[in-house]
Image (cartoon, rainbow, N blue to C red; front, side, top):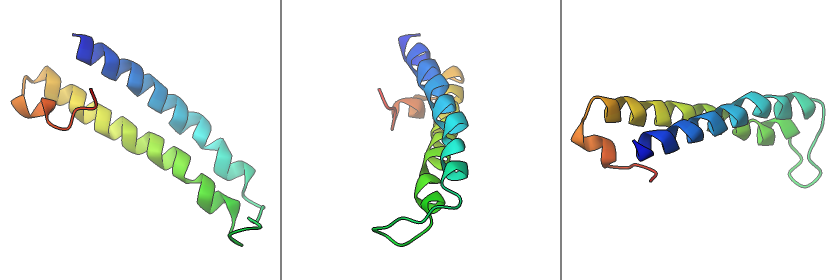
Length: 78
C-alpha cells in the first residue's frame, strides 16, 4: 500500500512536469541558444517528454502491482 501511495504521488508530480513542461518549448520557440547555436525549444522539449515517459512508466508499475505480478518489484523506483 505504501508503494502504491508513493507511486501515486510520483504520478501527480510527473503530471505537473508534463503539463507545465509544455510551456518551456513554447517560451523558447523563437529563441536561439548562444552557446549551442540551436533553437531553445530543442533543449526545452526534454521536460514534457520526460514527464510523459515518467507517467507511462509509473502507470505500468502501478498496473503490474495491482495485478500482483512478481515482476512489478523489478525496476521499481522505491
